[in-house]
Length: 597
Image 1 (cartoon, rainbow, N blue to C red):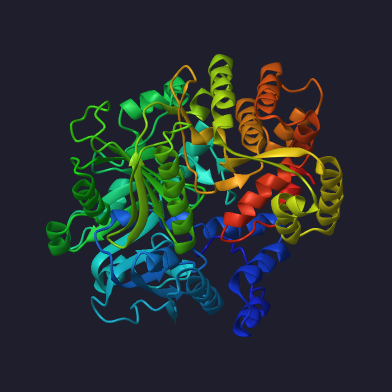
Image 2 (image 1 turned 120 degrees about the vertical axis):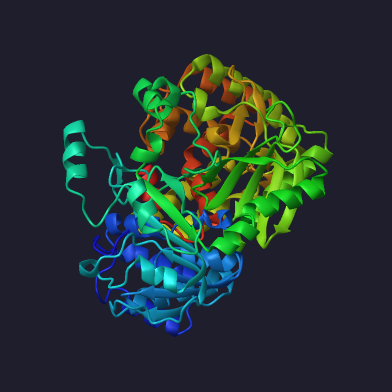
């Protein structure tokens, strides 16, 4: 975002929260209280800026250590992601309070402090020549009237290695609306008017390349941050074959989009870029950090090195990197990998859990299909897990195809009973506390709304009344089984269940299949998760084959209709408890906004 954009916080709003941090309070509850104080629109805007995925392109750089200067809005998570990856961050911002807040956040999440210097809008930056190994400016091209007096040459002067700027494309065809997943796509006439009157110093890709071409530096590398730098998911190389743009089966039906891509218009029209200017000696002597990781994985696995294919910044603030075999044959397993890259220590724990879970399933002969684990640990200072990349498609790419989705559910009903631990308990007060109360507690604690908290207590009482005395077989629980976590062939046959980083070893059954069905309904019919969930609760509203799948699974594992109905009613609590257990901070009033509770 630029300094001319509306800020998520007004002058003085941050002051009382910094006072609490100064007094020694923990960072997470202070941040959550701050978000609760803000109107929903500004809270979502701030949450978007604070996503750690904003720094997901960092492993594509060559450097891995040294002092790093970050110029722009210090609420951005990029600085502490860099800290987690080995840099020493130094913030340069027009707002002292924002810098102090990010310093607290970096200390809390990574243990690394952020030095900071207040911008005075001077033309010359207050730093010595070549002081920083990495310089990042997320505010785009600086303009004096926008609050920054320096120019790109000043950024280059203080940089001894890599200079990165993230910028909007003057010709970009969509803009972020500063709320997750929401974009403005103008009509053709408006699009033409907007590109004829460039705003905020925006340029085309060619213009940015010219501005970042410096003596003694390699030609600037460009990456698309797609669909938009404020809320992107894909990093796409514009100078190299990879990382490449993923185009799924549904997108291929958009003839206009496919024609534009075939004509090579993507680099011209993509909404935003990250451009990298690198000292020539560094560019000539060192591969990118992620390429060095792939080389080490080749040595560890004894396979030929996989070649980068697709780079995805996930909603869970990790990177998923898919590689291709060096042979070019996608049926060749050597080097056909999927890497889960953690962008902070708390995400490293989830990545490690995912690897541990799929390893245990492989040791048991794969009662359900999961990717083959290859490596888990730290390479080049990056916490990651590597597994065999599965063929096929993620299930959302066939969402709405009833034949394929019927097959997916049939396979799940046959496979998931194999995850039972063999232990069956009778739910008494102690068992209810162990498997259910903690979920209600954590969700209620983060409800952020008294009406929601009271509704959750009423739901807890009803759930307890229904479940006491019920028999419950314990199961390995995926806990986050959405359709995007299922890999299928074009007919819907399951090739593997993905992303076990939220799994629980011996827990409540039925929820996984329930969640899979609710998310498929949401995906196929559009709308919100609340509508898909309430549709399932309404007699006769859900599709008969989905209800049949639930009933067949319940019969196979020996749970009663009463047990199933209780879990269905409490579905939002299970979803929210999983999220609150893994998020770095709670999203304000999330259960109320997501489920209407």
